[in-house]
Amino acid sequence: MAASARKAPNILITGTPGTGKSTLAGQVAERTGLHHIDVGAIAKDSALYDGYDDEYDCPVIDDDRIVDELEDKMAAGGNVVDYHGCDFFPERWFDVVFVLRVDNTLLYDRLVARGYAGRKLADNVECEILQTIVEEARESYASEIVHELRSDAPDDVDINARRTGNV
Ligand SMILES: Nc1ncnc2c1ncn2[C@@H]1O[C@H](COP(=O)(O)OP(=O)(O)O)[C@@H](O)[C@H]1O
Image (cartoon, rainbow, N blue to C red; front, top):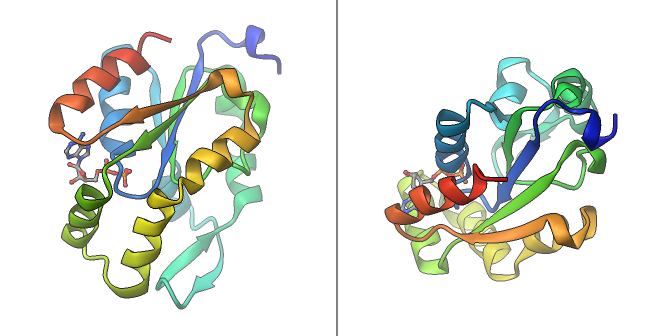
């Protein structure tokens, strides 16, 4: 379905784990009435997994089944989707893509607070340093719809929610 056929826009909020995607998506949903789709939670609730990652000690999501699961909702529009990856979603789904960015030291502290350690902690901080998700977003979507947002301080949540909710 073309973007113009949707009754409301679909927004993607992506970024390294811990950058604040769920926090921001929740605020945007509250302000706008858009439906918050937390892809990680949907994968968990419906067990849309395709194996287990022993190194990171977590299940691997099944991209194809996630896309199938969300297709009807995305075709209808009016969703704010949050996930730490973005290259497997159909490009046509999104009207705008926000990539959250955070200072590396702040991210480190947030991930430690979440219980990340060792390789999982180091790889996620490296992901932010190397701008991996920014590059993934720019390779997957038209450059004019991809925007980076800083999410270092609590005030940024409100600033970003206003900006994100005004698309
Ligand atoms: N702008 C911000 N400033 C300070 N802390 C934040 C900000 N955004 C989110 N947080 C905090 O950082 C942690 C990770 O946020 P979360 O929304 O779960 O990230 P993600 O969904 O990207 O993994 C949470 O403890 C959250 O309260």
